[in-house]
Length: 223
Ligand code: DX5
Ligand code: ZN
Image 1 (tube, rainbow, N blue to C red):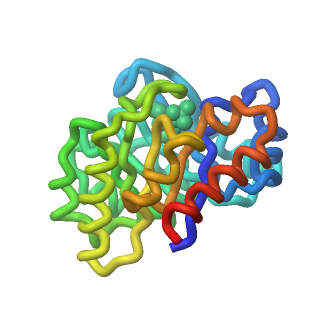
Image 2 (image 1 turned 60 degrees about the horizontal axis):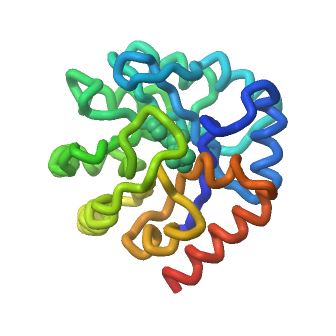
């Protein structure tokens, strides 16, 4: 599966968000990673469907990967579908009925994904993997950008890679948290194919150079 770079707009300039997102896409990014936090499931508060819709209205056509860190999760799903989300991923802890939430995302025309916190076991996948388009492994505790990559996430990625391959389904394996030029190679080697990077990209002086470096580290690691 083609490797995709998904800048997390949590680290973008919110005062000029549309232009910053265009800049990062022009610089070679593939997907817009959209972090939704509710000050309840995670100790931070960010952006909702209005902003997603505003990005679409601004002319952004790239896939928008909505990472929901909200509880409850079901109520807001139709709103994000309407606002132009492509992927909608959620944490199993935030849903009373995980299978129902996955179905709800698909019924609304979006691609469902399940997100695993550092201490959340992958066993959930045994029961729903065939229903998913994405598995997202958190390599930090959700809530903030700019945290350190948790090393045990590499073993978890390898385990998720094996489960996805065994399923025989086309499912993206995404990593989120602490991804940078210096570690993206080993992350790719562990099986990830979709790479969220917030501070590493938006905090850099030259988006195009950083994205090219990230991509060449991936290519070197998997070829
Ligand atoms: C954390 C978010 C991440 C975050 C990643 O809760 O889900 O997407 O923005 O930021 P970096 O790449 O800076 O760790
Ligand atoms: Zn995220």
